[in-house]
Image (cartoon, rainbow, N blue to C red):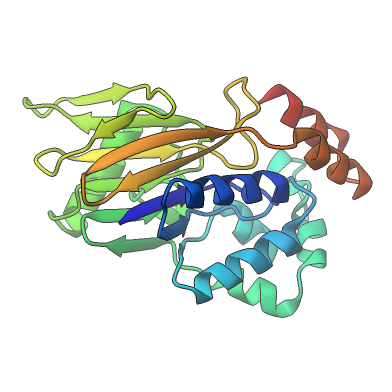
Length: 252
């Protein structure tokens, strides 16, 4: 079975559709959405409705911090970027759509895999897994839950990275190359941040996701071109901050 892992869609319908089409073309039969369906982008309703339909068809979903913000926008916004579209997104979504998002779990377990938006270590506190220290905390928390968990998949950081434990127990970071299948055997423990579908932040505009071949135990990080101009135009047409349109074209 090939599992398509998509995270941080951020209401970018154009990027979402491009990644779904690419994953299906590569033979994906199971889909997982790892949080932040909404926030920043112009199409929260379309994205959430697509996610709801996917869930009905068996897709696995977890909740992200922007999903939570959209369901419970702050009464006194601090001015943080993440809060700037929270109330707008809240108002766009129907009560049933908000209820769906609000009741998504923080984690999902299937076999050797554990899915989480941020870190398994206190998932509701939204810790970023940028480096070996953060990866170690998340991996240790996963192992404490169940020693049979060998693959932790998350998003949140908007970058693609792989961490694994070497023979001596040392945690090793690995920068993946797009479209290169990486063996991830069960005699080691692995943590991958799969990047962002809707808002890459590595200086490139192509959308990100990952494909896990669960039979061959191979993980492929993928980049997908999409209509960035249309996504940016939708943000402007919605009257959202110009910066959110501009950053799509800069990959920041």
